[in-house]
Image 1: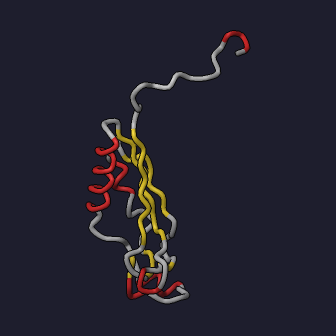
Image 2 (image 1 turned 45 degrees about the vertical axis):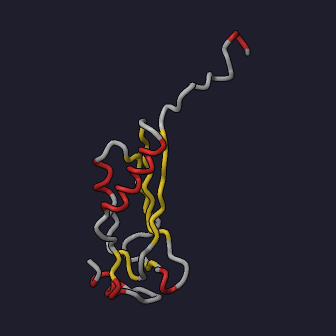
Image 3 (image 1 turned 30 degrees about the vertical axis):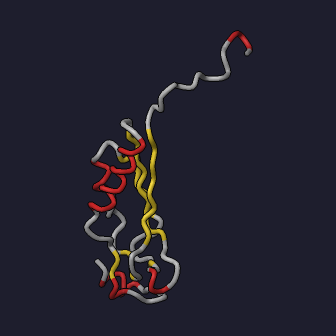
Length: 119
C-alpha cells in the first residue's frame, strides 16, 4: 500500500443488504401499450429501479407464439435478510394487476393505426 493507505477493504461480518432482481416475461402476445406501467413501484424506497425492455407500440411475444419476451425488470434492495428480499420481490410481482399488452394488436408488424388503438 502506497502511503500506508490500505487497498483491501475489510469485509463486514454480516451482509450490509440484499439485492434482488426479477425479469417480467410477457404472459401473452400483443402490443405494449404503456412506457410507464412499472413507475408507480418506485414510490417504495426498497425498489432501486425499474427497466423496460419493450416500449409502447412494440410487439411482445407470449408463450403461445414462442419464447416469451422479457418486457421489464424490477430491482430491489432490502436490509433485513435474503428471505425478506425474496418475499418482497414475490409480493411486488404479485401486486401487479395487469401488464399493458393489448391482445387486439397482436400482429407481426404494427403500424401507427394499431398504436392508436392500444392507447
